[in-house]
Image (cartoon, rainbow, N blue to C red; front, side, top):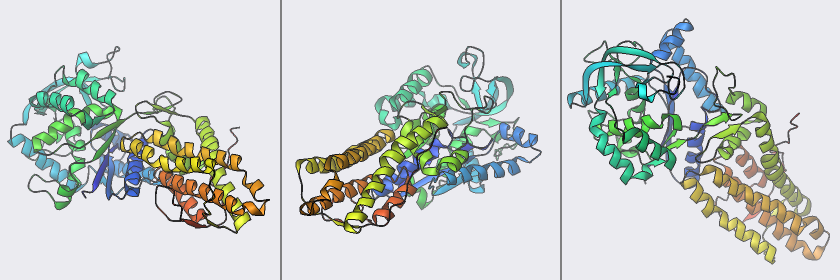
Length: 505
């Protein structure tokens, strides 16, 4: 089988990433782990975007060279990804020599075949977004339509990519192959608002910026950010116009490219055109995820409402933060986070439902059977219905995860765990334990509960990997099937609390 190749948008090295920035690699990591428990060999790439005028300005303000500045921030970003337990396979930087070398070749190849030409650019430029706009695209205040900050007029010699050449092909792409870009709302927006009105040739070099990759044959120009940034998905796995590596041929096209909805336009319009220019296949799927809002407002340092992931992890633990973000950000709509909402979800889902269930079942197994549990198969109707719930979970969960509806898949696992707690209340093991004639029935009930815990923890492992590992050790069972295994056996260890309830005050 081809390896499953996932990429994230690379984080811009302008400052420390906030909780919204971490959703991108976290989502990709969750899908990567899901694919792995299903037997796939996965390569997950993330990294940092390190060139541009904003970096020049930030470095100057900090009395540092641009390289010193991006080295520091890139390490900071990588550290945050590690704190969030993002299990990436490749971490690339656009200042890597390999990347810079290949970008120069890509620029020359496009130029030689007539897809890049020299001209002059006069337009409105937003420094924070590294984007040019026309007057008609500005918001009602004459500001950048993305970040709503002031734009400045620039005029300079520049090289342009013939994006207009690919106008018809872009229209046909999304009309005939809608499955390449999800969610549907993003695809419709790109097609109707940006492509059908007509795409303009794209500025791909600057002379007013020094911190960038020089154009080999015209060194006063540096490669403009999007041709530099987007090509990281292929340069770091061995693409080269002069002859690509075996790894590139094995991994490309990407199976999944995870991006934020605010950069959909660049990935859905520029990126396919670049790939067509190079004669390469398009990725199989681009997923433009929603934002994580703070108290229903977009996070920004200027507003003073930024939440940093490492602060949340220190206070609440990594799996609690992972769980909240992956569970509470819906498929096509923005999610919302506050400390109060996070605590509420920890208490209701992780402490009350999951933690309480594992604690109760292991404690009863140790108390009544010295931790050694096998299936005595004494089934009543209530047991059969419960087992059916266990066996019906995986197919529904798989459908949700395969279509990137992660939140829905997590909800279905939690529903089974809630049924498990209800099953305890209905079968009343503590009553069964008082009657020696019902010992086999008691053991059957506990076995059924352990199977629900085992399967539930496996299916939650892409979301809360550390906790799932703790559960596996406590139930002392490494069977990896996704359905009820009537011949399984358990030799339990002592229970340990997984999540503690938190007092909001």
